[in-house]
Length: 241
Ligand SMILES: [Zn+2]
Image (tube, rainbow, N blue to C red; front, side, top):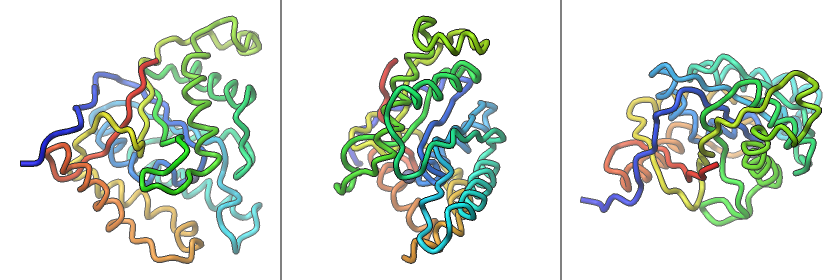
C-alpha cells in the first residue's frame, strides 16, 4: 500500500469564495472538489480577476471577453456554482497591488466565506516551468485580502460603501500547489470536473494543442489519489489566516 502523505482536508465549512485570475483556472482540478462540496449543500462563489480576453491568439479580445465569460458561467453551473463575478482587471497584465486587494476584500465582505480557494501562486507550476504572472498576482492578493477583509481600518472606503469587516476566513486553500498538504477524495465528481473543463471549448480549441480534458484531469486526480489512498483526489496547500 502506498504511504499516505496528504492529510484529509478540514471540510467543516459552509461557504467558500474561489478567487482566480482567468476563466479555466478553477477547471484544471479544483472544480471536481467544488462539485463534491456543492452536492453536500455548501455554497461556493467564483470570483475572477479577468475575463481571459488575452487567452485566444486567433480571436480579438472584445469577442473573447464575451465567449470566455460565458464559458466560465457555463462551467461553474456544471459544478453547482450559480454566482460568478468578474473584477475586470486586464488579462495578462494583472498587477498585484492595493486596487486588486481592495476588490477581493470587498467580495470577501459581501460573501462572508469561511475559506478562500485559489490556485498555485508560486514561481513555478508543480511540473517545474514558470507560473503565469496573473496567477502569482491574484493568488498573493487573495491571501492578503483574506486578512484585509477583517480589519476595519484597512480600505476604509469599503466601510463607506456599506461593507462591514468580515474576519471569518479561516484558511486559504491553494489547489495545484507544489507544497500540497491536504487532499479531498472527489470520487465520481471527477467527471463533473471533466464536464466543467469541457465547457471551455473555444479556449481549448484556441490552444492549438490536443488537450483531452478527461485524460488530463483523471491522470492528475489519480496521481493525487495514490498519495491519499483513493481513486481520485484533489490536493490543496492549506494556509491558515
Ligand atoms: Zn490562468
